[in-house]
Length: 239
Image 1 (cartoon, rainbow, N blue to C red):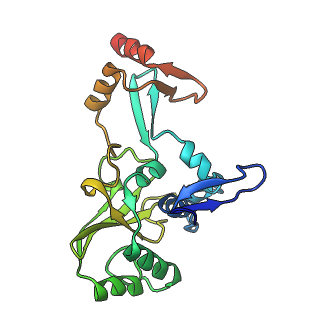
Image 2 (tube, rainbow, N blue to C red):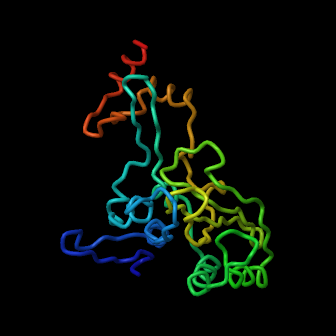
Image 3 (cartoon, rainbow, N blue to C red):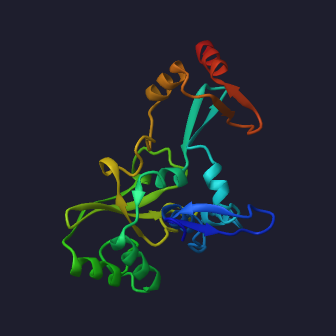
């Protein structure tokens, strides 16, 4: 580690040197964590989240747009996608409590705690040494979400400080294929991301289009085809 950042060397066909923060390193590890293959799931040979993600470098994720938009020209429908990597690496922090918990998680093999993705050893550790309260549990699959992958988690208060346990869904079906939970400290306003909304409804997207906040749209059926903001506004006015 150099000045709070990790040096990671890649293969010759990749970057010679890439610098990433501890949070980025941990999130990248979660996104590429193998979560197995379930019989009967829809992942086929290599279409599970972890299989697709393992083909990407940390640079690939870092170069993704925070959010992207696809446009169905025929029906005039816009689909928004938020990069899970960017969503998780803006405002989350790692402190000593997180690092101790996450280290125990890696070394444990007992998963019978009352919190999804959390080992008994890890939960007992924070519960024994700190005043710990699970505020609520959640899964983004159960509500409106534009995230590129499903997240499952729990908001936790530890000694009056706000933390969040997060699992990334790397499988094919929402019922299974989640990573082990990792603990992060929430930064400003106790939010996972300071300004990137997990979800925008159609009225919010329309406002962004009218204000010119979205520069480029990708065609829903042909990723090589792009539309400008003006082209989208003209098409929506036609429909």
